Image (tube, rainbow, N blue to C red):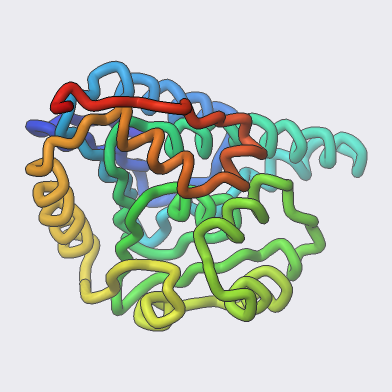
Length: 241
């Protein structure tokens, strides 16, 4: 379902298999555990790269499981459980004491799109993959932390409108122009990961204090951190002072 590997100061969190990496309760729990391991092993100068195998980064929540509840109320309860369970994943990424990079091998939809945006940097392929918030098309409203993260990470109101209210599917180069992702100059799963590694290696050379980095991140995105209950500390000083 996912693997965690450490190479030097780079952590690699990979969604494995050739499916569309739907977030089941089991996968969500595995992600939370993996991110706790990353945090516990962090040193000054660490960085995280999150990627996936196959043509999907993630297609969002396991809606088939929710719909198999046998009733509409049961399906709603299961979906609410998924939404509530996924919130700590976003919280863990926004409070992780290191730079984070999402390397997308393909499509990122709904909660998969949200997972990508929870990273500091997002890299896409030029030749494959779209960003897509499917909720308006399938008749679902957004959890509060979904819209808070969108407002925090996507500066243009018209872009947010097109993504959230029009269900626009955005390819890599367009996503760069819209300010959603940082790069889309890659033509294979391997090349987007290689680009993420190059960026990660540049970042780890800075050897930033991880706690300071995390606190600056939280202060940069006060709305989503407020929704998640992440309260920035008043002062965190580096040992360099």
